[in-house]
Length: 272
Ligand code: ADP
Image (cartoon, rainbow, N blue to C red; front, side, top):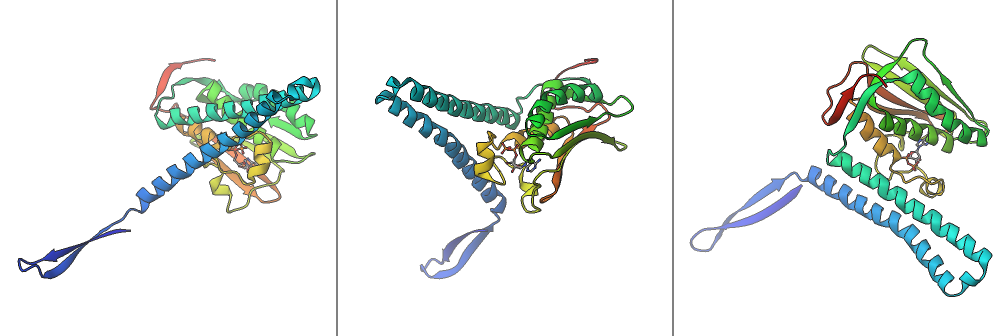
């Protein structure tokens, strides 16, 4: 609550009373705080890799360049830190396009059994590297959703990658489709580390990570789920999470069965 006090005087300059204006600024303050926190986060996320790039570059210029092996090692650090900054900027730009309603979706019918089969094939390699079992259980009938293939693929990749990243070796990751009257639901269920009840509602926030150091080391920007949620909402769908700490997590993408009226759709084509 914001309060302003203005004294009220009579013609003899004697104070007669005070006018108090009370203003509920909670919402405004919350937005302000969120914006400040976001800017602080962006600055920090960019400054960290930038500092690394700068210090390795200086060391190279001061003579380390003469030792070929050291030089190669430093250059590869500079290269991966630059990648990190590039990923961050790419994700920030995509979020800002959603914020400004500048996203144009290229909507087509997508048959999800076939689509998931191909998308999952690429992730299998990463799961196998961690000795995890990644399975897709197709539906016995065609599942048609209306979506932008690139964007839908991005969400699937993001949640499957997270399932792999936040699960230990030998974990099992299942991808399956269910439905109710109105929605097709694509779920990715892992037997990984899980998320506590307190953290769960916050994982869709920009830059929120349960374990900052750890997820950064694994190469995430902390924006993946925030973007995935925007993408699902732009498709008139939803992205939800259920989790039990220490047991595992299930992320579910909801797609309306009926072709939705989209706000900023580019064009509509039938067929793949
Ligand atoms: P990041 O780039 O850190 O992976 P995301 O936006 O994709 O960012 O995810 C936000 C956070 O949610 C992650 O840092 C992680 O703590 C948590 N998270 C996401 N998916 C899972 C999962 N399947 N199991 C456990 N934690 C998860």
